[in-house]
Image 1 (cartoon, rainbow, N blue to C red):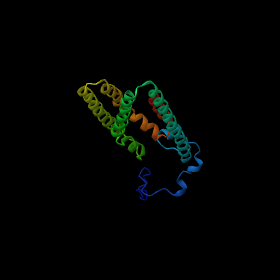
Image 2: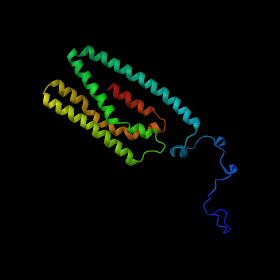
Image 3: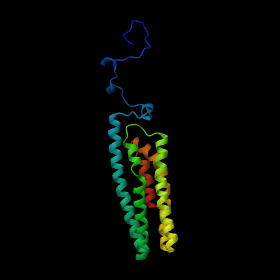
Image 4: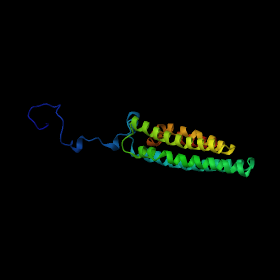
Length: 193
């Protein structure tokens, strides 16, 4: 103990250090890359990244809506009303299954104080992948039972959602570091494709 007369300076300190020994956080200056990697960023950097992220997410939302609107206009011109309805059904199933399979796990990891472990991220990928595969399996079986071209088109549209879960680790990492630009590029690319 620090108060013992044994003179061992390696003994753990049980009392908090005096105020004079604490670092002055105002005078530290810019955060080093090592501190940023460790998850320690200044409040000024958090504020700056949050503003940039919020702005970027707003632009992303507008770009995705605009791309969706343009896509719908093009599809409405190219497809018959029946075919357009089939495409709309496929999009609805994709949106429903994406919301169902996510389950909020990625959001939980982003909001938690401690960074997720590799095992946590693997579990999230597994949950989302299995839930997505279930939806793909149901739509595929339905297409086989119904035996119509329309059902096969919907099943084909839904099939790629099984891959969505694999983006969780990267998205969680980018969101935790408040770097939204890679996420935005991926989501706009998904919408355009």
